[in-house]
Image (cartoon, rainbow, N blue to C red; front, side, top):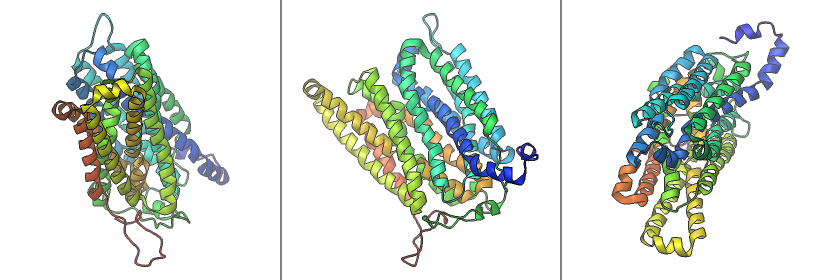
Length: 455
């Protein structure tokens, strides 16, 4: 491993201290890496209104360019994950962050609209596709690093904190990018995102290393004690590849379907707020930032809670049901308001706007809260030595959804307007329920749960 040379001069005591305390720096790097890339793939869609006007796009063109980000990530996730398990997380994360920063800088220079020139939809789509292809390296490599440094019983919290970076970065992007797009154009948007990735690469260079006691085999996971409160047994890394593990695929596919309502909010939430309830730039930014902030807090809480309870699978299924109910309510409310839209907006302007903004926030948070728990489940089933591949499978399913969702929403708007969009999102959340694997019940009532240890 590349870190071995770097620790060869350390005494055993010094290595142990580093192994015990350095993990928080590694978690910080994983958080920063995911946040910097999330600011791009979750933040750019919050500029959808300005993308539409600045690049002269219709809703179909807007859906295409936003979907290209997801397609790039989905196509590249699995190769990056396999490469991470082969090369190590440090090399892959550094390469990915620097390459993504270069791609965003290229968009700033060559694909930003101006008074003299407006790039075509093909140029923008290919540029965002490239950003997705390169940025797909971040998820699996940072997740594998966190799994290597944290033990079972605390991994759920650690992975949820890392996953919290996705809504945190998206929330920061939602606050800053629309204002930058409105005042400074897309040159400033892409330049800021490029700078974030480059700075994070510097932190990764300084702090991201393999743990001194890392073991790349089944013993590495089997030797980790489970949380005394969770009581979950830890399986040895299976001999079968994660690519052929049905338990991992069920979690990944369920997560991909459950991402539909989340991504409907992320990609077209700003358009809904602008077109349907006529919110201004500030209201849109605050609402979308609240979605991401609430999701971040929910992920941290859910990671710690499921570590203590040992109920990851049950929690994912509960999120599926709650999300289906919230989006069904949003579809119903939107349908009712659509029939009396003029009366609502004239007599109850503030209440009308606030009510729908709160519904968007509630649905978005529920549809995002489970991410860290799902990724912990997949990585635990695979074992640390194969975690890069397992996390890549999950991310491939998630980002295929990011590609498809923006493409499907414009036709749904044409057929049935916003009620149909939210109704389809509700159905997708409900479909995820039977896809997620069920928890395995213990025969003895007082026995600890092992839903995270068995497939």
